[in-house]
Length: 338
Image (cartoon, rainbow, N blue to C red; front, top):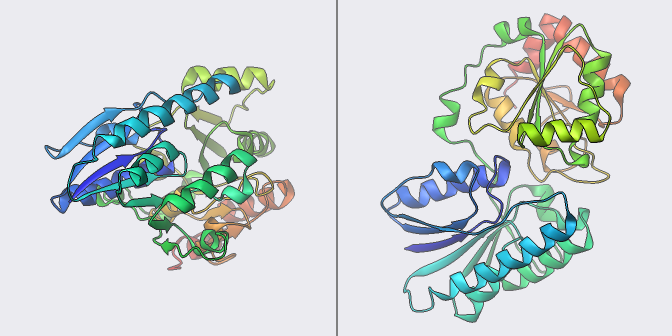
């Protein structure tokens, strides 16, 4: 089997990380893959004689107009790229996220089967995303989603296949789960981006309110972008907070943490799955996540973590303090099987 795979923004977030695992399985099965994506993320580390790369020039910009122009150009590039497979037998087009709509449109025009691996809940985003989702769901022959919650958001008549995200062996093998040792670290970790709905500002505020503990923030962006964001928002990190720029391998941060947070704001954005929660639990770390979304399906409140609203600062502070001062509670949550 041959796959033409399309993914626009190749960074160190969850969707390219999942796609990397998917492509890894394709290659392990003996399939050939032509990967169309940008540079600078998880997908850069894929290597195989059966893997061919085509670069799509796409990245975000502080300017919405420039981002829109780049997005339109990426659609055009993707559309013409997929036309090259018109006479390629046994070729399927695999589209990761709802963004590469140009590739899906071109694929249907040349009669190729389209698989959409959907990571978004478009209904919780703006009109742009909802329009893309509407188009993509009509172009795709097969739709994959990542959680029961996400599946319930699809329009009537859509029958998505639910395939929860998993962790590759080379990731879990680098984890060193040891709740006894983790409890003594007294370190709170969050992996996130600079987008307002991801709770980065709330994490900085929480760190300032809890000087007795250490906090680590790993941001999916460059050091320059982080400094610019802090300056633009008038924020000064507290002395107990370490901020790190984007990393391909984040296992050292989990191995140095005690508790992992996800402070996404469900009023602005809903997590369809939550890779950081899955990664944290693989390291047997207690997790605090939002009350809404696919990520909440992974955490049984009070059993293997907690579901708390990102704006409930008092409850967040109380819960973190309890976890990091009550050894029995910490070990019970960390060692829970759910």
